[in-house]
Length: 458
Ligand code: AMP
Ligand code: ZN
Image 1 (tube, rainbow, N blue to C red):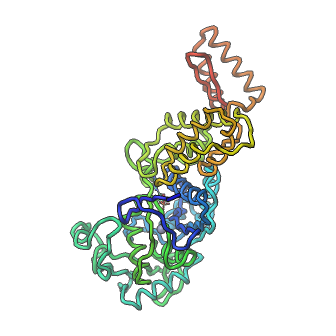
Image 2: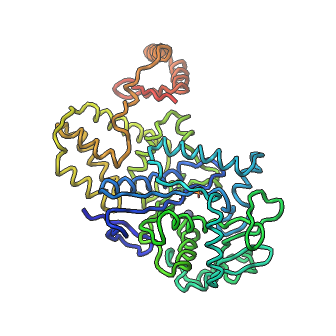
């Protein structure tokens, strides 16, 4: 069945044709590991995971490469300020290496909690310094880069007439729109660092033909994606904030090196928002997978929330929304578990509709509605069908729903005490017990049909 993908480069849905039949290579821009990844970042990785699972559902052998940025990403994406890893190291009085190690581990746990399949290859920038230097040298030799003494090696964007094509900007607009304080020694304000000179006190530094230094941020993705996927690549993903600088610069470096088109399909995920704005580390308005757990949510309820919005639409995060997602996921699991087991083959029409939905630029919200249809149908084939759908959805439908878990005796006793307090209309005591129960993972809700509870142990 045909797969359609929305390509940021052409601003249209295109039919997916792989470079090698039956195989698909995808490069996913990974996290900068200087602090915790937040659930906004994780939305981008859930999206990439859905893409991979969809391709695998279609029988493709997928090579999924993700980098770990552990050097070179400066505080401003436009090569200004300190390296984020150095900033993290100062904040926590550790070395940048320790910072990278700690937050990489934390990130891996978040991937696991959200049932994101482990990438085929995970590559760290600091393990590829030599290859990056070769890349920079080649660009320099070909006349695409120049040196600013005491600063570093910069890419000359004017050497590529189509610079800006991903975000639809041209060189004149970029010059006109540049901020005044931009580095005046650059030939064009959009020129970007390939390699930065390191002052002696800079901890992360390597020898280079231009003296000790460290790589710019963008060069790692061009270098590692080509190393593991070849000089031409099927798919590259990231969040939409990466379109105007990071991905534009990746394209410039890569196409300058090879002289041919580089990535065939550019896919970008929209933001997870808070109060209508981007959830971000720098705005300090973020939550992590650990926050979800502390509040007794199943991290997969967050995955469910992501599945319920198309990846190209912004999703506003609220705790009410999390509650609704948690309830929906529990109901879907319960419905799945109550279905009769059967060896009959899944029902063709629903399977077909599901397949069409995911192949239509990942219309996962629609696909999810077919999962609900299957769950409600109670047909003998539905369980097998949902097992098949869950290969893409990744919701672990066969895991016990939270309500079905047994309460430990002391919590059951507290719950009984609360019910008694309510019965004698002692609202103060009943509220106090509700909060106490909540702090121990028992979420109590009073509905018109009586009191319901859910147990969400940490
Ligand atoms: P970073 O660690 O900042 O390099 O970001 C890792 C990934 O998360 C990138 O693909 C970003 O585009 C993406 N990202 C950052 N903030 C958000 C957000 N609020 N919603 C969705 N994706 C985001
Ligand atoms: Zn990247």
